[in-house]
Image 1 (cartoon, rainbow, N blue to C red):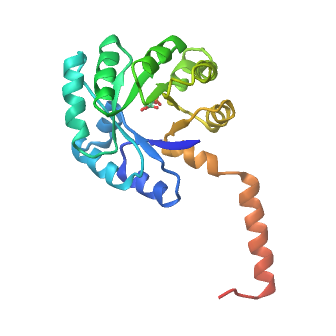
Image 2 (cartoon, rainbow, N blue to C red):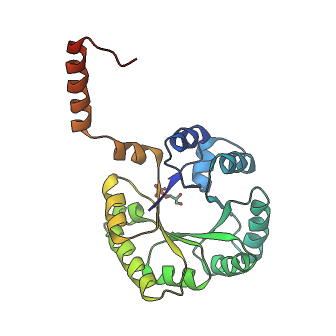
Image 3 (cartoon, rainbow, N blue to C red):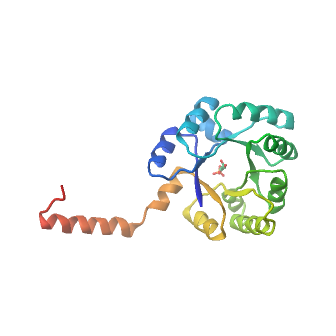
Length: 218
Ligand code: E4P
């Protein structure tokens, strides 16, 4: 399973990349606003330190505008994936940009039917938002299971399921068990994955016992 980081904070990406935990990055207009940075500049910096796809989202709402913005975003770096919303105009832009060889991430997916349409439009990634569905008392993970099953039934559909709006480790583990290709994780969720109280307690005990030996490795 690939791990993308869901942030526009370059320092966070750099430190997680050092631990080999970054296969790609996703951003959105809200994350860019939160970073306080210039959009194109921050995407260029992220692309330079990320081995895989970096999603940069269009802000036009009509197909021609999305295509024009997508073309500009693609000039920033070869690993830019153009992110378009799951609207009719977004699907038109997806088909056009994909035909031109772009990676396209279709975002704001909340139903299996929408995911099927994105795949037919040639999306590289579909981004179903699990946390936002949970927020309205709808089972976000059910959506992932449905999309994975539908895509598996049609091997000609090459779109990867990119689990988005991940709020905690259980979302990730359930998605991995279902066989989702990618999860995009906020840095705090990646750190939650790492922590276990028994790891901390075990390390503390080992170090205390080692001290008693009076030895040193170096
Ligand atoms: C995905 O690409 C989105 O940036 C993201 O996962 C949205 O998550 P949120 O619901 O926590 O804003």
